Amino acid sequence: MIREVAKWGSFVKFSHTVFALPFALASMAVAARASRGWPGWRTLGLVLVAMVGARTCAMAFNRIVDRRFDARNPRTAGRHLPQGLVSLAGAVGLCAGSGGLLVLASWALNPLCLALSPVALFLVCFYSLTKRFTDFTHLWLGLALAAAPVGAWLAVKGTVEFLPRVDGRLDVGQGALVPLVLGLAVVLWLVGLDIIYATQDYEFDRREGLHSLVVRWGPRNALSVAFLSHLFMWAVLVVFGGLCRFRLTYWIGMVLILALLLMEHLIARRRDAVSINVAFFKLNGVLSVTFMVVTILEISFPWFRLRWADGWW
Picture 1: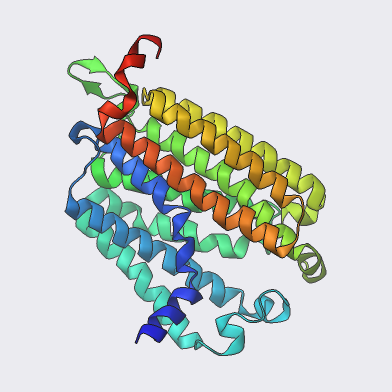
Picture 2: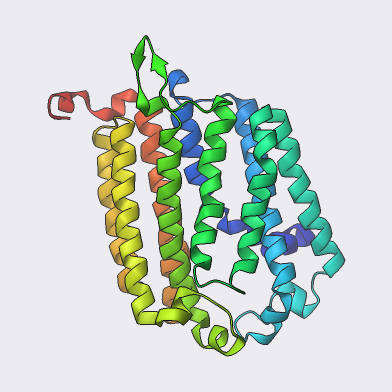
């Protein structure tokens, strides 16, 4: 049984959940800041179920529709479907079941989440088809993962209010603009991240007629675009921190995140498999977890703000 669980977890790259999940949890903490970032175990559990369902559905769909390309690509020929380690019927069943899990969790959360769950499923699955007709496939992936922080916010709030009043005063930092700004940061992050990943398949994608910015502009130019995208992402995170009125802990986190981004692009320029793996997975995993930790510390533990610095923040 353990081997079967490990096989299916590997099939959908369950370890890559570290990319979107920390941003969703951070968004949920901001939405629940009135209770110091703790939305309740029921909401937290349902958000986790929805996240796992959406991501598993998306990855299973990707493996199904790309199985013929995967079989012809030396880098991906060892994946489960081309090797027959997983049956097509099993993959389809996993895709449908995990999509249903998202809808079920959304239904249990609130009516707005339920109404938007088909939109979320469309976003996360449609990305897998975009490389057949557009060079901006990376943007679609960004939009798909940006649904995570927006959806987590809606799971807690249940409504969309851009100009809320708190204690009789207007407070944009608790309105729906906050998850949208965070979602924009995720879009920019994923555009850069996916460009770095796509450099591995530059020759294969050109030969097969598949689209990406790497194919359109070449790896060197595309990596420059990825670097600019990540700089803009960092700037948007600064705006996010300003909207939320975060203090010293968050800005220390922003310095660390900027250092991680610079390190990522220095490593990615080498374009070998080991460097891409470090730049794509390890550094970005640390980045997303860093963002989540400093955000939750700001909201849940006010004493981490180092009150002696209140005068100059």
